[in-house]
Length: 244
Image 1 (cartoon, helix red, strand yellow):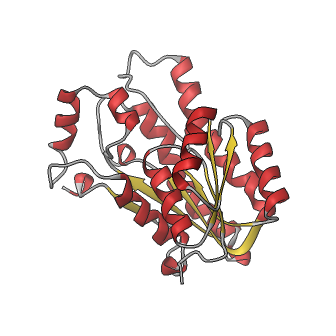
Image 2 (tube, rainbow, N blue to C red; image 1 turned 135 degrees about the horizontal axis):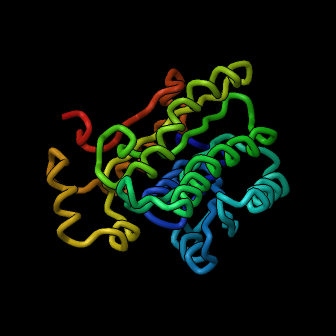
Image 3 (cartoon, rainbow, N blue to C red; image 1 turned 45 degrees about the horizontal axis):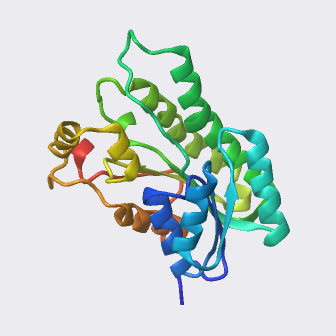
């Protein structure tokens, strides 16, 4: 028996990295998963990799019309949902003094505004007793130069989880934040050169980046009844980077 047997899950930004690993694991544990991604080719490849019990919906989590289309698809195909992993997000380095309005609007638009409406628009379909998790970042816990816009756009989730669980307590919907550290991914390959990757690895006690599957298992814990008594918390999975 799987930990998510019979459940319906939505994972935004589910075409690569830890969210894709999570989608695969959720399906293995019995869920039907809806994933989103901005690029149709990447979405089709992710659906192919997952193989079964998956529906891909092309869209941008920062676009409210795309979110409406996502949940219209969920309603039409499954009627309701039990798990939402709001994972779509991104960022780029920009030190104070060089931050542009466009950078602020882009990353707060996706990481903060997009996450809020991803959750809010899901509520009419949510079954009581469900689980919401949002992808944070250990950048919001550390003091990494150049990453203030990204860190700020992720830090809001910790406050939202506490407030939203209080607002949703009568429906027994749990709200938590999954906060990964440095995780090896295709996006990381785009952003960082080898020297930067080695610098980040030097901050991790084990000296190695996290793996997408390590974050996926943490997401499964928060999505499933294994964490039934965990609510309003931030689960930090960064190998101890921000603990020392």
